[in-house]
Length: 76
Length: 474
Image (cartoon, rainbow over all chains, first blue to last red):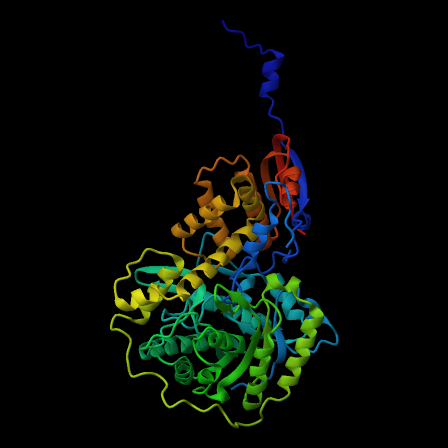
């Protein structure tokens, strides 16, 4: 007959560790973005694009912002 | 025509409040692109809801409000969308708006075979057939909204076809048939002149000056050999010159608004903008009290030619939409081939794509940066292009991002933290809609990762483990 006993290591493995919880207020989340000069507020971003037949600079700005392989941040 | 004068103002965007709130503000009018403050339910495309908090903030500003529509342009042969009209009615009521304006352009292709957003305002077919279709639709919109309607004169980057109606004559006839007013976008007609489409006076001459209710002034810049209506900052002197000449001829002018896109607001010197507001005020004071001299009409306006038989309003919108969104529709006939080879088509396509890319990098900011930094910008661009080929644009930013996130997860990229970051970006975006707290699982210490990406780089080392990031509302 098999024993129902577990050794300590088995018990440790069975204990499901709770994840570490970190709280981040929404406003602080936006402040994390160093490149926040463009409209930090989410307001107005979720709906339809604005009335315009032009060029959206957000794409270009974002590409210029990410650091290059030499870890230089390009200024805009 | 309604007698309410709104006066001078700006198109409202967050960031411009100081100009509206100032006690000594010269602005008496505020134009709202209300659909920017709507949400589309990600699961129910026909369900639109309003961002009441944002609209209430606008309501509290002291200016008279007018509403400008963007999402469902008025230059389409497709019948108006009822869910859109319902949300527009609610917005108008909330803001107590005095009139509604919309574009003489189309931004949705809708016929028995297809229904998709084009992601950009495109020029309508300038034909007699289309006049009747558009007039009927505009009347339906006016009946539903119960407000005066002003049709905005558009920018057109395409070359004129010999069989097309004259731009000004088409606008004049349409406004007569639909009994609607005109929102004269001075920057648009100047842009059309610079790009060789039509001289400003040629365009103005067939119009009825008594129908011009509102002016738009804006700025732009040169791009790929075209002048763009980009709303990118201050109004050029030439646009003010046209307004200076035009306004004393307009007996029913009710408002003048300057347009600046929100992403350009931080780059605008508000003191310089104040100077332009003063200039706008001076021009406003010169408006006419009665009809006076107008621009002389050229002897020949539209040619007697008609569009090719199969160039119906539906086919025009379907072909333009397919070309601009990169859909693989058949381009068989001569007019379609000519349209496909028009230099304006690659420009429209490029501009529409920059808007799609702008939405993704703005709303999926950390995921996009992570992909650009891990895979390289060129690979990220290629992924976006592949996505654009598979999916037509979405009218609403959040829905576009949800579709991109879904698609990019299916690409099985070897990026360990991409799922975490997509969940994070989507949670933050959804909070913008419902202001509810959210929990996002991370397989590494989230703050180290987010701070590094926030600085525009990847972290050197990130402790791995099971983490939960609780995003809390303001």
